[in-house]
Amino acid sequence: MTHETMPQMPHTPSDQPVRVLVTGATGYIGSRLVPALLEAGHDVRVLTRSRDKLAERSWIDRVDVVEGDATRRRDLDTALDGIEVAYYLLHSMDGGGDFEERDRELARQFGLAAQAAGVRRIVYLSGLHPDQNAKGGLSSHLASRVEVGDLLMASGVPTVVLQAAIILGSGSASFEMLRHLTHNLPVMLTPKWVENRIQPIAIRDVLHYLVGAATMPGDPNRTFDIGGPEVLTYRDMIRRFAALNGWRPRPIVSVPVLTPRLASMWVSVVTPVPAGIAKPLVGSLVHEVVTQENDIDDVIGPPPGGALTYDEAVRSALGDTPRDDRGRPEPGTVDPAQLTAADPDWAGR
Image 1 (cartoon, helix red, strand yellow):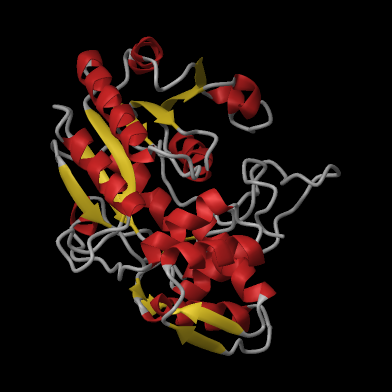
Image 2: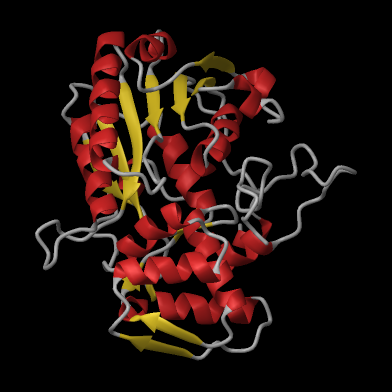
């Protein structure tokens, strides 16, 4: 089967349905993971501060909704009761202070609650990163992501930590930053990190691994790198994005004087990506992020037909989705790579 003829949601029903909890169900990953888990045959519960935020989701009547706050142990105990696999998709990308301590405490509390509830497995989506001892160390947000994974793995509950770089799909903050930079700047003066190597991955393939992690055999308690089939520079991605859209080539000149702080301010000025989101994204781009192992394919198996190439993933993200008379995607027609009602207003414009 070629990538072009592959179904939009390639997850087949599992012969081992499990009771799962999804935190962060209103976010980019969570809003796409819930229908993928349902399609795979799992029994899904979501934890959200407000059920109203999920009211227009097509799957709302197929899940158990627990209203609560992940910072409160009582709410966690309620949400985790009877759960076998818990998806931890919580992190701070709001630009606020003390995010490291907030994420640290949230992960600690979640791990303790999961252990007390008898949860069999935690699944966490983290960031692909170089060796933590590399020159200059990790950016603060990437280091926090790594620490959260370590805390969950130390919780006493076996934890599968999937580590991804840039996720290709409309609505993904890193993809939207790439989209808007390429569209808005016909000529770019960019930081020197545009030459760093990155191994992006399509959202379709991220969902494949996340869903597969629910029924992964054994009790793994480790990280798994996940990535697409190509290693590119950010410069490569900008040029190919422009070409796929039929835009003229974007001349790119890298300069050494743009620090991550200045670069994030620059991104928030020339794109609609909020500064609180641009800052951690830019901070992570100072690193080369390439997979160091591919063990996940030995355990879960690769996506059906193979992982999507960069061009295939971008084409999928830019494709047309049938809409109803209110401008919303028709039920059952949404490719996870395309925009949904869950995505921010600035995505895709």
